[in-house]
Image (cartoon, rainbow over all chains, first blue to last red; front, side, top):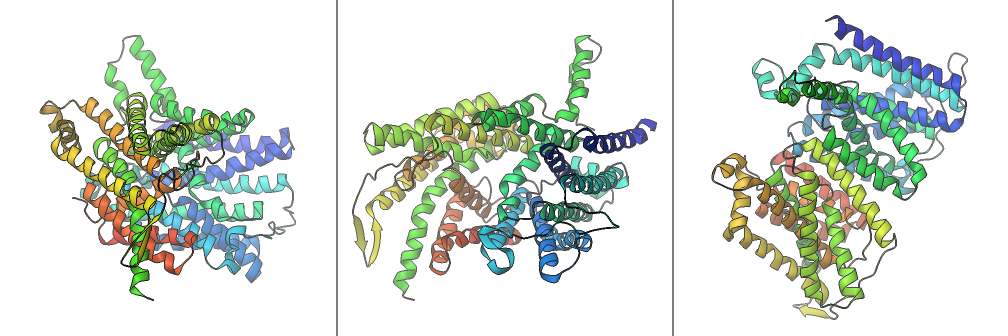
Length: 331
Length: 286
């Protein structure tokens, strides 16, 4: 029990420490850019994993990032609100739209849920791309989004300041989601993922849990979207298409969906790997694809489960545990 | 608007839809046997296109002989893929998703390195148009549509009458019961995956003269195939044909009213509506 309570504090502390030391080591804009992207992806993968924790692979997750981004961009440029208001308003718009969309999509499950959410994401993307061009900018994108305004005398125009803002946002999200995962909600979500019928018969309102995870996840995605809009200052519908969504799934699953720390490991390792592989030019995608296949074949529960698997293997070699000890689900 | 225009629009939609049904049938066959969704399916379609380019366009072999060769080559590639990477992933949807994604990237990047990034044109095998009752269709599209229908019928007969085909249906219904009856699950899975890929390869060969061959050519048909199998019901072969006809009709008619980019939204809206009314697709079982 003590270990359960200590692990999240240590994990969050480690992320906070790493995020805080980076700007002390380097002010190079490339490294800060990569680090900001990692933190942005982290909020996305952790909120995606919140939904996976109830057993749902939501392929429209990236669309709620897009909804938050477009909502905030329009509220700032057209209505004249401050970034610090739209940061929450944009996320709120994403969460509000998540209620009807989630209610509809969650009526189906398994591969059908996967595909209906994919259909939703394409509808949202094509909507931003082909309709109301005056408002959303159409295929050429929405341009001229200002950077965040002043807050409490702080100016957010350089890379280090924006990195700091993303780091604070990310830490808030990490603390909230880790607390949630170690709470009653997290336990119930795990029960739903492993055996939703049993959970239902024990009196859990499975639909409401799934919808709550969907709406909460969408709120966080919207938050990341608002930051994205004012960080990049340009929005294209393809920023929220299949390709970035697929990368989110890859980060999360490679890290491991059984633990709240899986997406953290996966996002950091895979983002760094893709930056390093960039040196290989033409072979980058080839190697990246091969890495995916091999990881899933040799570490089917993700990187985060590797240490446990290695320990079991070691014990088996010493002949202390029966061979089937490794067959269970990741905790 | 004249009724002729409407019928012509429907005909245009149905013609290509039959080829996409082939892609969808492969996808749904693999899903029913292995319980996984193969996202690299479009890359097997691409492989069929390249076989056609090298054997028919460059070496000048007969069009139909090339088609058979494309089907066989891609079928073998499918068996190899199943044996090497997919055989342990039965029912593990999330892991299979990542693995097939990896395969997609490996195959696309591999094609770029091996065949180059530029589009390769494949000349038409047939010229001229057919006119019946005021409707116009090019001979080429007619041949492509009819060939697709022949392949669909052949698949139906194979699954109904042949021993391996019946074993596939048995595994799709209940793998354990099939194994108890002496069906070799490993062999059936490999063969089923191969047949599924072969269908995609055939479709790629059929459409190669209509659209140019390129490493990324698999993306569009595979999205259409997904729409078709969700609308029709995953794992259902008649459903795939019905879904293909519906998609072809909706897109054909939609092309009368909106641009080709906007038409794509219709298929996805159809998916959402169908899943709301019948969550398992139109012909899907319990």
